Length: 329
Ligand SMILES: [Zn+2]
View 1 (cartoon, rainbow, N blue to C red):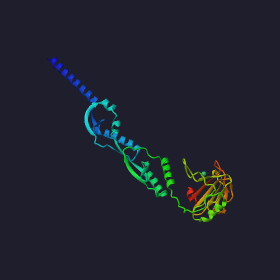
View 2 (cartoon, protein in one colour):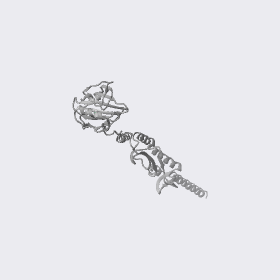
View 3 (tube, rainbow, N blue to C red):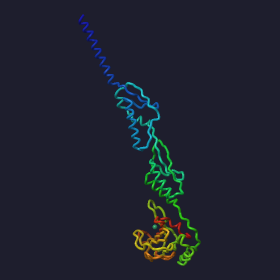
View 4 (cartoon, helix red, strand yellow):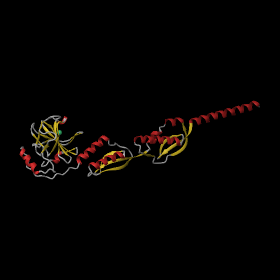
């Protein structure tokens, strides 16, 4: 009798022990977790809502690294369901990848539009404003403005180097040109007398004359690749006369490095002309010259590959295309 009781007690004890072991094992293997679904898409299992928030915040910071002004958001509320799943499922999942795919982004980009055509794209408003402000200053007749756009993906932005080149290009194409009244002068010949005739017909306030007898421009004003050719090259022969563009005061006569032997003549009103690569200089600094006066001889001194006159016209120090300022061109 006693042994039977003992047996029942012992068996019960053993069963309870076994049951507890099973419960403990199950609890250890299957954890209560949050199953997260977004837009009917399964995102993953999280221990709690905070853990989901952490993943979400990490992904937002990731986007903010690309553009600090990004608006990152989810377009639906995540749905949390409690369930029991095995541990290894939690560790093997990649919630970052699945949630990243659902994260929506909105970037603000700033276009520089020239005559309603997008020319530059920036993700900084200051950068776009800078170019538009400078364009309005340099070429006020060109319609330039900043337009704002919202995009879901940040495409390629305009680099500063490219933007600077676009800027220079727009300015050089649209720089206002001072209109010089047309003056009828005899057609070009190769004598000095004709130049003097022309001189007599032109008033001092207007443009100047061709500084050479030849009128073939072998290299025009403007960009040669990245560098600006600040004058026009007029082909000629060694020793050909160089004429003063208009009356003025010689401010420099001598060696100008890559310009070779050169002259600078100040014509007043901020207008200066430069004559470079000369073989001979016939006037000195401080001399007054008359329009059409022979002031130097053509050559190929300095950084030059052949006989020609490099002729520059500067308005308040800035080189402009002299061609537009030559009378009877
Ligand atoms: Zn030149």
